[in-house]
Image 1 (cartoon, rainbow, N blue to C red):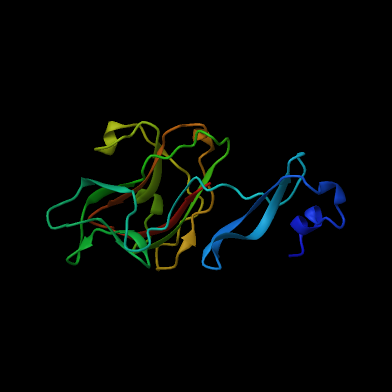
Image 2 (tube, rainbow, N blue to C red):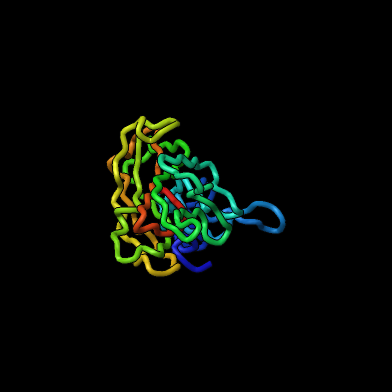
Length: 220
C-alpha cells in the first residue's frame, strides 16, 4: 500500500536496490489459511537504510481472557474464614479481586504475581494494563490496589523477597465498571534485569472492600 515502505523499496524509483536483502516488519495473521505477514509498517535494507515505523517488541503479555489467570500465581497473605477466594477470572472482566462476601467487607491481602520475565535485552521498558475499580467509596485507590516489582521473588509468601512499588499513572474513579488504561508504567529502573516478577496487590478492610478488575497486561 501507499506509504513509507512502498516509497522506499519500489524498484521503479530505487533501481539500485535490486538484488539486496531486506527485512520487513508487520503483523502475523492468518493469510489464505496459513500464517502470513500483513500490514507491513517497516523495512530495513542490508546496507543499513530503513524506513517506516519500527514496531516495539512485546516482552510479555497476558489478556486474562478465556477464563484463565494465565501463568500468574495467586498468593493469599490474609484470607479470613468464609472467603473462598479473593481473585477470580472471567473472559470479559479479566482478573477480579474483591472481598465483599455475604454482605460484609472482609479484611484481606492477596497478591497476583506474574511468572518470571526477562528484561535483560532492553534499556527502556514500560508496562500498560486496563483496569476498572468500583466500591472504593471515596477512599484512595493506592491504599487498596497497588502494583509491585521484585527481582528476588521466586515463590511462597511475598514477604520472602524485596519489592518495589511501581507508579501507576492512572486509576479509575472507583465508582463504576468502566475500564481505563493504566498509562505507561515505567520499568526503566529495572531494564537489564534477567529475572523480574510483577505483582498486583489487593487489600481490603472491614470499612472498604473495593472490586478491582485487571486485563490486557503488556510489557514492551
